[in-house]
Image (cartoon, rainbow, N blue to C red; front, side):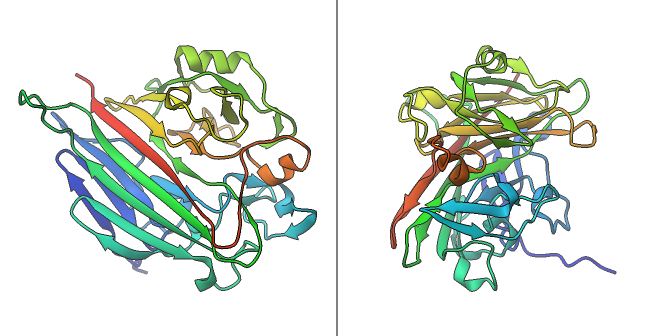
Amino acid sequence: MLAIMHPRVQIVDGPLRAEIVPHLGAGLSGLWLEGTSGLIPLMRPAPADVEWFNALACYTLTPWCNRIAMASLTFQGRVYPMRADWVDGTAIHGIGKDHPWHVLDRSPVSASFLFRSQDVGRPNWPWTFESRIRYEVEAGSADRHGARDASHALHVELTTRNTDSTPMPYSCGFHPFYPQMGNSRIRLTTAPLERYPAVEMIPYGPPARERLCERFEQGTLLDLEPIDDVFRFTGTGYAGGVSDAASRRVRIELPTGADIDVETSPEFGHFVVFSGRGPKGNELDFACIEPVSAANDGCNLENKGVKCGVMVLTPGEATTARWTLRVRARG
């Protein structure tokens, strides 16, 4: 039986190119940099016939990030049961990842897409909302002396609006898969962090300083030690957004021969690291370093008195979060 091949949208500027899959959450199927020896994969490429969000190179988390414990959230004193869509009985990574997004506009270097939850039959979220995402690639520009900046950028902007008649909790993020394998590991360096205590990826208390945080701040290789945890940047002491860009600094040195400096807007005061080994002990050929606006199970954690970045959008209110990857080839 032949697989159905859905059209993709490719954007290119100079040596940087990205490919988007509108029918699958407008996620990325790949991001590449042209190097002296050919294309360098900056994310794990998706298969040509990709039909599952977790096989993408990167997908968008909206209107919540990571897990909702037992697929049930409590917000403003009311319990909202949801459908579990992960093997551990949680509701995971929002609903934008599962559905087609409409192409709004495109150019050779940019493309925008729209998702409206009211267009979906029985969406797994109690409120109606719409999300718009815009991707743009930017090649390094020449300065007045004619020298060319060796860094290039992927800019991503996500805007979500509450289209319901009541307030809606909201968090968001992005879930990229960066390639690594065997002894070729990613080196990760970050701004100061705190780690949330958690059981089965569900936090149960406020974040605290730990040795792993210090390792990330000093720069460390992501070895085969299993990591699947959520961290908070400590820049301002505020449990949600972090206003100082330097306090959200993340640098990713890929074994494929490129370095990525991650820039985010203040909404992304948290990030998740998933690396090492999978739940069955299998060695992962990728690491996920995910900018997120809130901790896992954010609504339920805030109900325990732990502020962790969950936003509340009133009817008609919108919020925008931005994520930029600045890339340069090594050597």
